[in-house]
Length: 267
Image 1: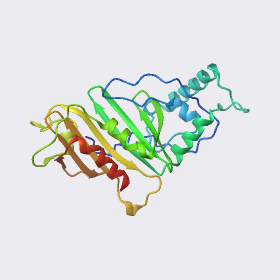
Image 2: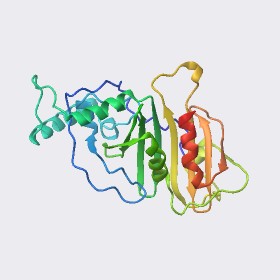
Image 3: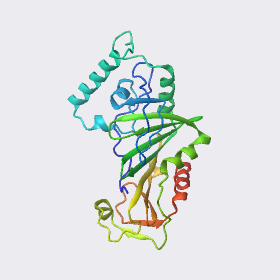
Image 4: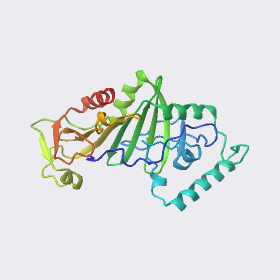
């Protein structure tokens, strides 16, 4: 359970509205193993391809590129450009970018203009997957990002968002929590130094926050929700970014998790 803003891995690069000047769609591949199920993508883009299309986003991580120095980032982007050309994409007239299918452009424009981004990080024994829910006026862009720097995109309408969220946070085998609150320090939680943790074996750990493009000081720091869904019980925490106070965990039912996340998004 993260004690810092779970969106902190995001690239600090400023967002630019994408145009039809770069990137491509890639063939869909099967979903990842159970526990880190990704959406069945309409389009798959890498960190490098998103950079080529001017679609870096202040709330979205670029895990592969973020691990490279500036020279390495430049080389990776150049290689991606050459590879896309080799696969048949046409360069623009000035040769500095690639022509993008109009459907991809439209989806990236919704992503760039979203009024809010719901961040849900899901960690299981099989690995970690982060899903960004870019909430537009009429549609929601789902973006699954794993450590390999591959971004899987799909679309749902607002009526379908609840079902998509419930599916993503489901934790088969997690039990309902019960008992008094548990108070632990952030350092102890991060280090796993907890005696007889009441949740037992963790099925899934969720870290949640909402990013909004237009905030002011009066809004305060973002609220962070954390969930430990275990085989002996499930627990949740609520704090704000930057708060160093001990974490108070309360019992929760796994069936209530999606609703709590939706309530945070509506707040």
